[in-house]
Image 1 (cartoon, protein in one colour):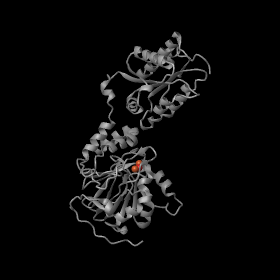
Image 2: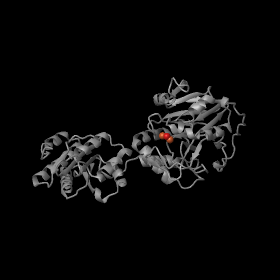
Image 3: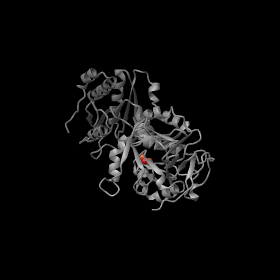
Image 4: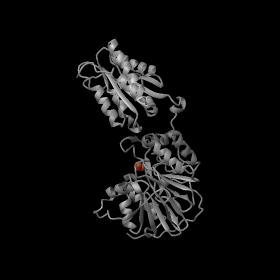
Length: 446
Ligand code: FEO
């Protein structure tokens, strides 16, 4: 298509407060830096797992330098007309020298094939981890699949003459491919999904839109939380940067006090339980459900055994009386987790599954897990729970414990041993654990 001829905006234009729904023009977010994204106010669920009360935005940006234009990210395919209209309002396609992809999820790369068709001279820049995703996206061998690209990592730069874009490698925020891009001269951080949220407001800037704190934290909880350590690694790169503006790929542009959003990420990513426990104390959380009190008695004995062995603070919760969401915080910070469930209709009971199914948002890798429960005639609950815990990448060094119907005093003693074994594993006292493990038996073969 013909490249429209448009005026370049003047550096130093006042930052606007406008309603972008009324037109399809780019919006300046810093001198010679424009938002060219799209609004999706009708969206109510995203990636199946996230909900949004008022839609989202797909933010993309254009940076103009003396030697050309860089496009940073694109939009979801269904919104590409809006993206191209805004792009055409501030640049010609033949001016585009660079296309930077901070993240290759389709909500940010839907318009990429068409953009590269319109600007075939543009050089594509992606993170080193994005190569396989790019190939899957553009399908080499297809008409769209033969574009050259350059991979970049932390410290690499591209030069627009009088403007420099520097890359920060920030993997897993939210996919392995993700990176941030920093415009040095204007102190703008194009942060990808980091610091984003699903919140659509045509006033666009954080100092103009409605209160989006809930959406910001909700987005963090579902997208970033499973990768807290990666968030902390990324913050080490981001915190030293002078920041005038953070420009994420979703939600408001953060131009007023942007550093508070960085601080909020550090707060949300930092463990708090470890501040309350002694340095040599470990935490075990025991959850249970009980229909006739038998699994409850087992749970009490497991707790007693773990506590009495020392060095472990144990918390005991009956799932009949709790909401799932607060437990997720406890689980994330605990060192060990034990789940007790009776077997009903050949399965663990629903509240246990509700809790276990909500744990995809936290990183449980390497935590110690265990399962126990009373049963009537089959007892599948314990192995099914163990299977789920292994799927969550937990370590299960102690075989699950099943008791047929009402636990005897001897069986409760075995439950105490079971708790002591878990505590020993938490302390790293594996020999002590192995010794008492001999007392943990299953009282009837299934
Ligand atoms: Fe907004 Fe992970 O894509």
